[in-house]
Amino acid sequence: MPPNHVDRRLAVAPMMDWTDRHCRYFLRQFSPAALLYTEMVVARAVIRGDRDRLLAFDPMEQPLALQLGGSDPDELALAARMGEDRGYREINLNVGCPSDRVQGGQFGACLMACPELVADCVAAMRDAVRLPVTVKTRIGIDDQEDEGFLEAFVKPVAEAGCGTFIIHARKAILKGLSPKQNREIPPLNYQRACWLKARFPDLEVILNGGLTGVEDVLPYCSRLDGFMIGRAAYHDPWVLSALHQSLVDPDFARPDAVAIVARMAEYAASRLAEGVPLRSITRHMLGMMNGRPGARAWRRVLSESAAQPGANVNLLQRALRTVEFASH
Image (cartoon, rainbow, N blue to C red; front, top):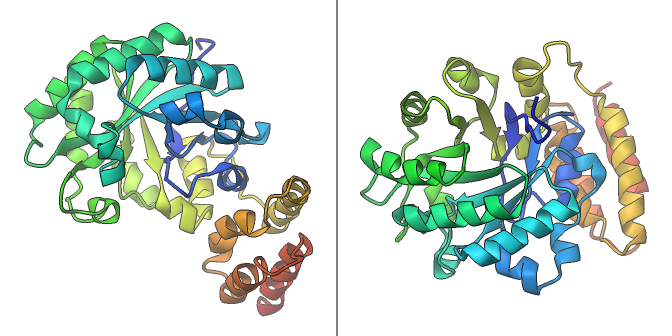
């Protein structure tokens, strides 16, 4: 394999305000190989802001990709170089977020209307780093959602050096819908991603959008190169383990919940010593016991007690005991 090869058969989506470093550390416990993505980081903020905070991660999170937002080729190139210096495995450009705030910065999904600018951004980043530069995008925007529009976007961006497209298989409505509504109202069209792969067979096409588990991805395994899952994995991280077993390693054994809690307690102790509030970590763990007896008690202990003054890592063991007690 090439030295910079990245396995994208299974990935966890970049999600604003969700996939921070504590979330990624937790999700890594459920799949040793899933490619994790940062939440979108604005290139200008990386250059001018607190890059130590914005780019920090634990080595346990690897393999890890940095998603950037922006539309200035020079800024993106500089931020990409900073990401490479920090040890990220991939630089991803966000061309899919439809929020008003992102559009106000002239990046995200609105860039689908500017394929030549996106191509310039990709070319600048490719010149700046040795890492793969990828693009996460939608299948269209507003009333521009046919195959011709998608092809007209992908072709120049691919020619600029992007070999991997992560396709959120919904169009984005740029005005009138919230980001949440844009994840739910425009209909999914997985066949459009399959069409793109058939049209550009040399490209790597990763499917994203509405995927909830193994049953959703299996029909497309022979037609696409990988799958990116988002909120379903956040709310039930065991989905990641099932997908890892199905897509990556059939001999993979489901992790032990008690061992995961022990590792998270050790991790939390280190972060608390740095001044990180316990709730910043435990909020990502609320879905861990979904479907088990005692799940409600687990969530209640973590959500109500983690924010209390003096909360420490012993809270995790206390929450675990409520599950074990309810299971007997």
